[in-house]
Image (cartoon, rainbow, N blue to C red; front, side, top):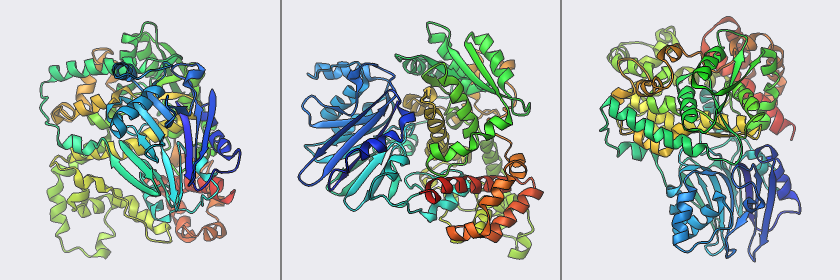
Length: 617
């Protein structure tokens, strides 16, 4: 796992600056670093990488790496799990390899198949390729968006990186905030691709390629999740058949992700997904697997005893660490440094803690990410079922002769339900509630906070529609972003077996009744998990992986929030209405309505980010 960056501009940047850009990502790759630059008649090109060695720990894996003929240069972050099969195929075609690393295979694959090569990779990756003959830079990101990749394009300057920090150091880069997306962040807790917090700066979308050639950008998807879902027949209806198929493909997926020249372990929270991944890893491993969990002294949030019980049953070498609230709070000020953009999913804090614990023992950890989205695991999916079956009530209510004055006295959640009439956004339940409050504290009108991807998801099943939407938005932009930054802070690579694209595509064939079975969420996944872990160990309410936001906002964080919301400061920013922010703080003090604490927390995270990257610049 690594951090990559580079540029193509009118001329080479000053000596040492590319190295300085690269070193902002030292945490992503402490084992090695490399720089490659060349001045062409019309432009200069520079590539760089920070390396976390996982496969082939020798110098032969050094990057940036050149093809044997020197015409292709790559800087690459990730793992291709089927690289040995591809290398064998390419060897038969006459390609020669010097190392045992997958980077050489990516180069040869590009030489043989061009941009179509990315369709052949089973893995997680973010790659940048300079093709001298084609006079272009190609950027590509894995299907599910596990590895991040940003780019900046303005005029004749093109800059890319795994994080925003290197791009911010580029000479012509301007830290101009794109205020249009702040409302979207406040409501969703992340900034969904392709935009970023800065103007002229974008994320490469999951499953996509960007080609920069002669000042122009071409973008295309080589793997479109929604199209694949639409074109996949839902023909697996037998439970035992489905369970056997899932077991076989998951065992292969886990086996591939245990391959490394460094120690590998698993996250074990005590829930279904991590327990299943850990159990399968223990089954296919030649020795006891290291498993890791974080415990909390707050019993309402502590799942560590359940994880320890499961670990004993499976037979892993289990590690746990109990954390006090004060220790978690100490990490707050580090969030802007490692997340680069405003990001306010508060489970990032315990994710950082479990990553820190794991990094003290292993270099790679397997996680259970993806189980909820693929197999219907979130509480929101229960709400989608209720909304669909009670939609006729909302239709009746929407036709009543309400006026705005009367409707304003109706509870916000009920009001959102009544107004949820647009079929293009039907599964995005209750987003109007927080959007209404977010707009109040913003000085300018916010961009629509709903996701247009839903327009392409054609199904009468609202639950299924929301699952597919989450796979294309919440999963890559929140869940995977959170874990990437949390783990790479400690130079830990996290692999997600459930998100092997073969499992994703296979899950589209499975009848929805095997995912949500008589109000039982994740039915098929649970049935398979029970083959490894007794049902009584797993069949219990999930406590989650969050922190006590409401309590913190009213106590330990209150002084800092008051400082960051000081009217003079907010007037200088020109983004938030000081009076309305003050009202939000007061409402959060008096009410347990989750919208107030969620919105205030996002405001607080934004202000921390602003202080780190704008005020201090």
